[in-house]
Length: 80
Image (cartoon, rainbow, N blue to C red):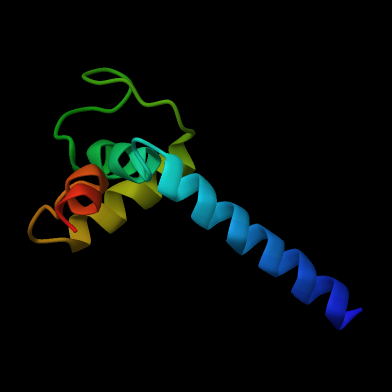
């Protein structure tokens, strides 16, 4: 059973690395999550949010913990 789980995890890790290396925007979703969390105004009224309220609250609380905006994943990926 452990060997099957280990094999499945290795397959997933390899497929992740391959897809991230071939992607033009490897973490576009995370950039959008940060944008949703850090955008001022009323969600669903002043700007569109494609996630439920509970998820929005998590994004807002995580973005509030950051004092400075990190570089986007696109900028980070291409600066290395």
